[in-house]
Length: 346
Image 1 (cartoon, rainbow, N blue to C red):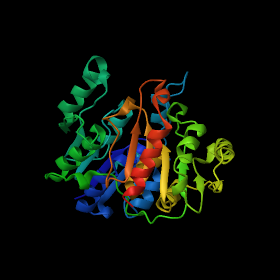
Image 2 (cartoon, one colour; image 1 turned 30 degrees about the vertical axis):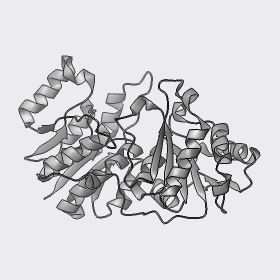
Image 3 (cartoon, rainbow, N blue to C red; image 1 turned 135 degrees about the vertical axis):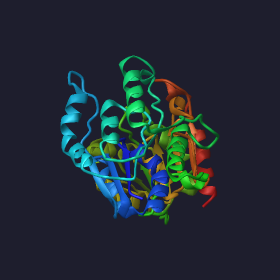
Image 4 (cartoon, one colour; image 1 turned 120 degrees about the vertical axis):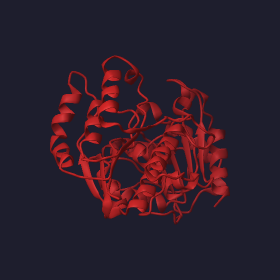
């Protein structure tokens, strides 16, 4: 069975779908997989699914004053034409918030069967978007899976990936099957803790002072190798300032910034840490996928959609507050307790 899988989302969303993609790859064989992902996700996809055909999509986020749909359509035209010349047994879309471009990419390969989750964007229910969705349904007759309600320990977006994969395979998948997982890296532990404190959105970040206060309460657990601070290559200056603030707070172990590396290498960095400390960002889902003990601090804004979940109980989510002031509800003692819980299962 030859499969086309479209997952044009950010790194964390790709990782959230990694269990469902792995289940499909194992059933079809990686050699029979055509996987289309955003260009910045492609290095990780190529490493994890090394025998698959990975199609990078140069999709960029919205920019004020720019017709993003037209710009991205033009940028993705070579990939779109490449997909039009591809024949598969089934075309699978693992994105429920589908844009016009997402739908074109999903429908591009020649296939007698197409499967996706229902579009969960509100605008898809009526107007021109509703007409577009209805037209796609009438002409291509895809199988649409209902977008699920969240379940304890199984957020709706995670469950949606599993439901689509189950529909393609014609059999139910277990919770273990759909949980994020990577074969290219597995947790081995180390004598340092890794802190990845920054998200792509500053509104998700937690101040260094709060991390320092929580760490001070766990000084009896501090690793000999100290605290390593890591993030994206363009966060270098912020990471250096964060590390200096941690060190100045009185942490007696070394605090250093990890050298900037590629996304494909980052799973190994996560897997080599004794504990991962992070916020709602790609590092959180990477920690879950490689089964590293982790403390993940996040607001309740996306609770039940993307979080919380834990493949083996060693990933502890600290969910606090909502809206722009969510950090005001966050307490250092809750983070400290989560650190002890995460390490208690090691």
